[in-house]
Image: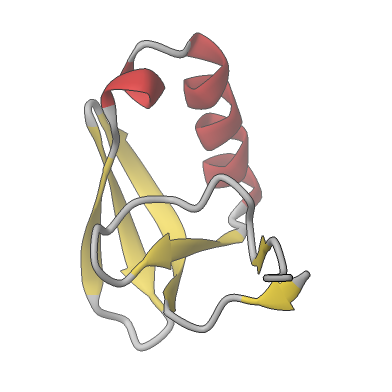
Length: 78
């Protein structure tokens, strides 16, 4: 596995279905978009709620402003 470099580091502030409000490390506000699968998944929303309450930092893609499913790691290329 290798580290992902094209990510924002964000802390979740509020859940405003179907988006999630967050703050980047530099204090800038960010709206995290959810995809259709996430919108229909009650376990996803339970996990996001737990992350919000724990005030954890999460990886968010630069381009799509979406959460990474694999956290901070991606499969290494062979």
